[in-house]
Image (cartoon, rainbow, N blue to C red; front, side):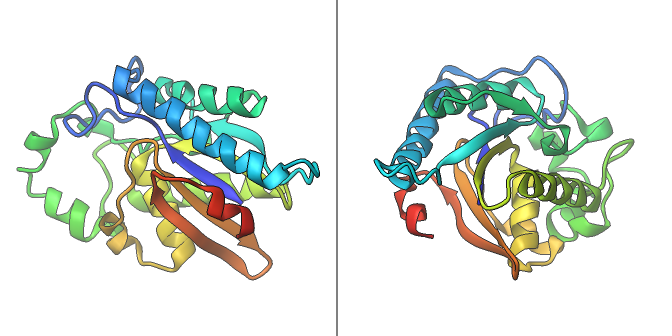
Length: 214
């Protein structure tokens, strides 16, 4: 099982398309969200491992290399007694020339309709396409699953990569992935089996203990 965690809020969440630009840290609210999701995941670990030591709690915590994901992952790793491992496959989409632009300005562009309604055909100027982002993210998770067969891992990433890989797991066309919502520090869980991936939950901001019997 892979627990996909979106990073916590930053001072520009919902206002700017930060992309991969360095130097963006969690806000005070984001740090509180990170602590809260760490506790929720910790409670799941407590429930799955229990006194029997069955070992079904998360065995590894991975994060994209950007500051906001690393800062979200650290409380999770601390709660689980693990360290944060960095995986570039979990990076935010490369928004190229749109990096750092205000969302209000981007929404006025003619291309914005394509981004929302036909993203599979769109490539950010001097950046990545949505299809490349989805393929990269899916490949990253496949590596983690292969590395930890039969175990649970945490992967801290970004909204669009998480939405894209959840859509892929659900068999939803990429052109419809924008209909999904992944809030800051929400958890989306995917179970990987011999019959393919299963979507266990999306955008959860509440208790995760039900996943203990998934």
